[in-house]
Each structure stands twice: as structure tokens, then as C-alpha cells.
Amino acid sequence: MRTIGVIGGSGLYDMPGLEGVEHVSVTTPFGDPSDEFVCGTMAGVRLVFLPRHGRGHRLLPSELNFRANIFGMKQLGAEWVIGVASVGSLREEIAPGHLVVPDQLIDRTVQRPSTFFGNGIVAHVSFADPFCSVLGAALTGAAQRLGVVVHPRGTYVCMEGPQFSTRAESFLYRQWGADVIGMTNLQEAKLAREAELCFATLALATDYDCWHERHADVVIGDVLRILHENVATAQRVIAETLPALPSVRTCACACALEHAIITDRARIPVAVKDDLQLLIGKYV
Image (cartoon, rainbow, N blue to C red):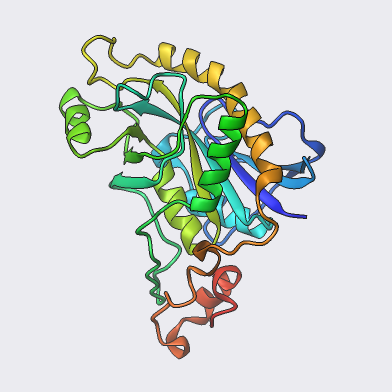
């Protein structure tokens, strides 16, 4: 049975329809994940769900233990991971309430660990195309079949937060060609690539950031209202996506580390090798 992970963002704290639900706590070499994982089956697929900010939304974006979250997904057997995220729109055509499946990222974070490597081992994975195109196409197709407005491409700017953008920043990101802005998915995508997981984002547009002259500036109350309306849609899209994924992965995500580790194998510290066995065991 295929195992698919879902990381729920703001407003998405569970997945209705799961059968045989089990709550699982895991410990990783990088500490504890955001919360317990919720495991069960849906549409003939094993699903592993994690609330990104913890139940009750207790963790700031910059406080998230991204490494533990992704490592935990790997420990529980996930091969595909869908990151659900609320975003601000930087484009007129991406209206609040629309979904976006980004295909590119811009990193504006400054204080977050973004790699499993270091401490005696060096690896450089390819990240030119940061999202899995197979998973992204499956999400887009599912949304289209459900009649949901979805944008199949877009550039996601990941900012540090927790404050929203200044107006000058919002105008700048539009000049860069960015389409949406959020605070979480950059690290998840990088770490998923290092863990050889297929990762894609299902972004829920909640507002027009603060660039749009005919719309009010970002107010958290309005964001949450739109977000809650979108959560049920996101859950339907995910449920529709699960059975559409192939049983065997043939994309490059599945072997991202094959030529990425450049450290002399004899010089990798034993403790580091042990900690990373789940990720690098087949290569060292």
C-alpha cells in the first residue's frame, strides 16, 4: 500500500474520512516534530497527516522543526508529501479562494535550518525544479475534476514572518515575477528533496497581500475567513488525488541523493552516519 504524507497548514488540522486512525509519536535525530502524526487509510492509500503548526496552532513559522517533520514522514514510510499552505496572492488573476500548485520557489528566509547535512557530511542535491512535477500534476488534475479554480503553475516567495509584507516588499516580489507569498514551504521542499520524497504544495490564496490598491491590506480576520472556506476544498482535492498517484515512482525525486554526497565515505563521522542512515544508507 502506498503511503502519502499530508502536512496541514493554517486551518487544516485533520483529514476527515480517514479509517483505522492511529496517533503516532516519533522521535528523530533532529528532535520532535510539530505534533503527533495521524495515520490511517483513505481511498485505498495509507495516509500520514501532520498539523504543521501543532494542534491549536502553537508554533510560529520560524519555530517549526522542519527537519523533524520531514524526517518523521520518511520514518513512517511516506514517499509522497503534500504541503497545504495559505498564501497571499501577488497577481490579479489569483483571487482569494483560488488554489495554486506552484512550480518554483524564492527563498527570503534567514534563520531556518534547511538541510539534513553538515557536521562532517556534505551533499548537494539538484533543486532547479523544487517541486515534484508528477505530484503537482496529480493535484492540479484532481482540482480540475472537482471544478475548483486552480492555477497549475506559479512562483512561491517564502518569507520569514510572522509579520506580513511591507508594501514595498509586496511590489518588489511582483517585479520579480512571483505569484504567491507564504511562510513555510521552502524548507519543506528542500528537505523533502534531500529525503528523496516527492513533494508538492497545494496553496490556498486568502488575500491580495498589500499591493492591491482596490483591496484592503492584509487583516488576519479576513484571511482566516477565506481560509476556513478553502479548507474543505483542499480536503476534497487531496482525497481525489490519492488514488491518482502511480504505484511506482519514476521521477528524479526518488534518487535525488544518488550522486549528491561528495564526502569521502571513510571520513563521515560514525554518529552522523547512524543519524542519517534512513536517508543515506543505500549510498554509503
